[in-house]
Image (cartoon, rainbow, N blue to C red; front, side, top):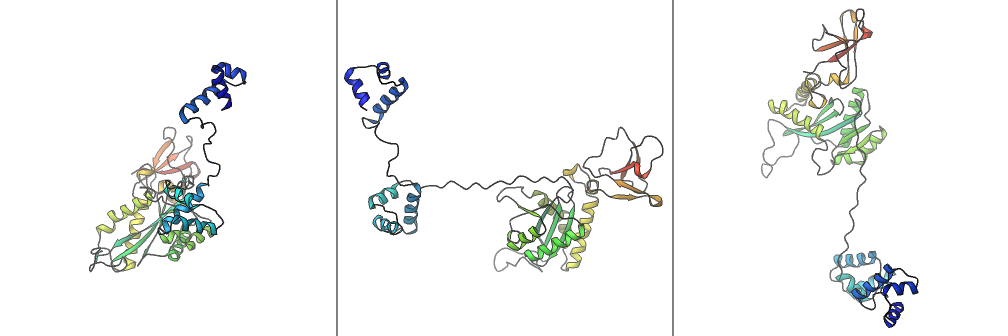
Amino acid sequence: MATLELRAARGWSARQTADRFFLTLTTVAAWMSRIHEGGANALLRLQQPVNRFPDLVRYIVQRLKVVCPRLGKAKIAEMVCRAGLHLAPTTVGRMLHEDPIVRDPIVAAVAPAVRADRPNHVWHVDLTAVPTRLGFWVPWRPGAVPQQWPFCWWVVVVLDHFSRRVQGSAVFEQKPDARALCAFLGRTIGKVGAVPRHLISDQESMFTSDGFRAWCRWRRIGVRYEAVGKHGSIAIVERFIRSMKQECTRRIQVPLRRDRLRGELGLYVAWYNSHRPHGAIGVRKEKSVVGFSVYGPAGTQVKVALARTPPSLSRASTAHCPVFPSVLLLWVRQSGPPSPSSIDCWTLPS
């Protein structure tokens, strides 16, 4: 400030002032603009007061006022004083009149996306209510009924992401808990003979319970959950449930006996895995992706390769399998008759 006063008294220009005090023209111009905007005390006033309390103190004072609206500024000052923070009643009043602090939302760590690159790598599990012939009635009293047998069945399905194969299904009289789901998944793993690396489900209470998560850790299965409020986060298993209801349960009278419903679902799952084409895997059937063996005459075994797309047919001779007409044999060797070791088998798209 004294530098600018001396400049005004001597009538120096900005260049002369910068040369005499070893300053730059930018510094002198910045000082002059601050004086023109904020007055003579602009160069001496700090941007923030030295005795300003942190935002945490302001947040505590404002929260106390929200929780206890009848507390005055003097009483709030006394309460924080007992906690070891000395505030004047006028300071508390000023903090109460300031804008409330909006905390930044906590950004959850986004886990990397899981991509299934082989069968039994990623499984989807979900459950749905299938109404019986009695139906759900109406959702209001006195016609409201609980969602359990004999008004509906609870069906749980497990779907493989890579091949779209239904690995297992179960029928329950009421909504299953975590113990029942763990038992069902254990039976499915034993039947398939493979343990998935990841298991994707929604955020129902049975899937987020400590018992279910502990069971998955014991099996070394990574649990993934759908994104809340995001459409299509578990679209694969939900699409299967829609197909199951449209193609099976809504075309029959759902029986009241569990064994009969299991039989109907077993027939549909067998047809779904063996004959139904899937658009996500190139309009092929599930067996054309998972792979299996074909036994021909005299015990001849033809191996089915494991891949999503068959190799080019331009360089190989082709013939149809006499045992399974829908299977195409690729003769890799061009010379001599084909042998079981030189034949790969692929299922043709339906």
